[in-house]
Length: 178
Image (cartoon, rainbow, N blue to C red; front, top):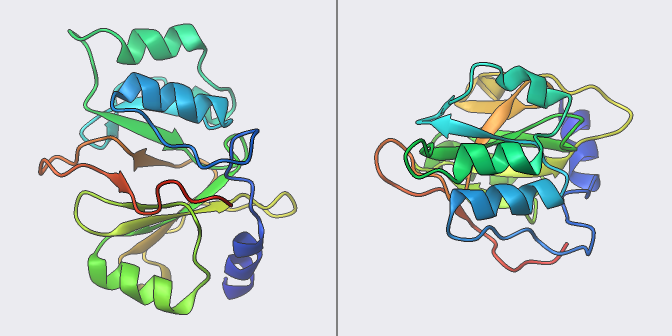
């Protein structure tokens, strides 16, 4: 497992085609469009759950711009959050540290990433590039802590979503270049 983390830290493909950090706008639609341009597959969320029943198809295909507009552009049906699908399609693995203590533990022992999110509960999502030569599955309770790995078959809640407690997910390192 530790070898995999070291390999993930060396993989830096979490940028848009111009090599800039993807910073979402203020709306979910703007953020989804920005993430889509970076090659990340997105889906609408209600709370922390997918708002569409067929969400798993977006692990192998990105939604169309029309689908994004239908999901995020209609105020009457607008979801409460935005999910980013992890795995090969989006070229992402995300380490999800549920608590501030687990985030501090992770960040003190393993390679940092220029893309990090503070979660609604004060934890962190640490984004790494997906390694082309490995398969990374979802794992829960890594290192016997409240740390999960989101790879193939997973997703994470992304900025500018709101946690059910009302706190907004936010990029920790806005404007950073990779």
